[in-house]
Amino acid sequence: MKIGIAGAGIGGLAAAALLARDGHSVTVFDQFDAPQPVGSGLVIQPVGLSVLDRIGVGDKARRLGAQIASMFGHEAENHRVVLSVSYGHAPDRKGLGIHRATLFSLLLDAAQDAGARLVPSHRVLGREGQALRFNDRLSDPFDLIVDACGAGSHLSPLISRPLPYGAVWATVPWPEDSKLPTDRLTQCYRRADRMLGVLPVGAMPDQPWQRLAAIFYSLPVSGFDQWRRTRFETWRADVSALWPDFAPFLGWLDGHDAFTFASYGHGSLARPYGDGIVHIGDAAHRTSPQLGQGANMALLDACALSRALRVSSGEDALRLYAGARRWHVATYQALSASFTPQYQSDSRVLPVIRDRMLAPLSRIWPVPKLLTRLVCGDLVPPMPSLTPRARGK
Image (cartoon, rainbow, N blue to C red; front, side):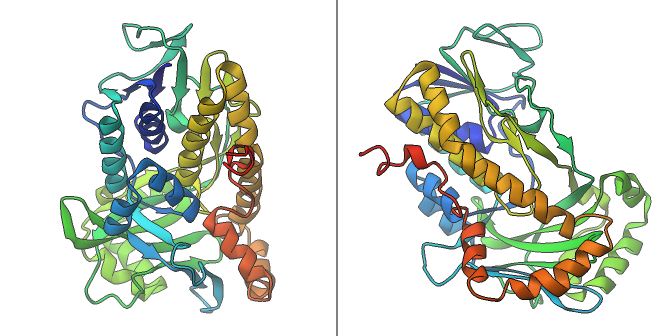
């Protein structure tokens, strides 16, 4: 097939690599003059790593990233443990902290090595039939359009519900004097209206000797401008007092401009495909980052689409893709919607329930095993109808 992919993000490049390797003619359009990632660090869960292995970049990602063995969080004021989730003892069931730029570089190389063609400086603003529309021109027609433009897609009919809380992110060298574990996502909460976090993300491809951390600070979307107006030294002193272990990571930064703001939405398409078009990643479903599944969902979508096109064609393949991903997406969206207000909201009641009821319950068997499956991404099968066993292959 002749396939046009709109968007060179994680989902778009993963789809390009898989589809081009299957023999399709793939062209990827991106709005930037030169390919580049957007964002800071993320966690690739075991389900996402299985897709990277399928693409052929899993081992490289593991060498450059940081293995995550657990997630831990405590309440700032009373130091009560709020979150404690282990990935277990299996060596192949760990998370991977990685910088978006590193993952982007690996996927871009894989897509181009597979034969996909990348066309920069082409922001997709719509479609006319099977052609993509840019500012002043149309592309050639494609047999299939893959919408991987993310939350800002002009091709997706998805209207998501904006979430009231977002976060500012920055990437810094890992301080030598830090006491935090280098194999753990560590967070500190003040009730639910503030959250600080440190995620080990390994190294960049061009500086493999420099360990890095992604740090983040959660705040209301409506409070971002006020945060920008606050003297940086004042804010740094406030959060350092709230969580002293966070202070060494701020020593590298001298102002608000070192941070990137991210906001989130919640919603999904009941039918993530149409006549000659299919939506993947945030163009098909959006949720908060609480369960660390955003990039993994995009990788799974790309993998499911490539598998569906292997066993079927036309609308049947798109229907097969949508059906294979439906329950996994729905489950994680529902869980994310229930967890998010406990960690990012103005509520005074939910943090109390979280700290005094849910946190103790999470340490009682069999809940720890369920939480491990939850963060690994396979609490429910990611694409049951497209697994080799399910299809007799």
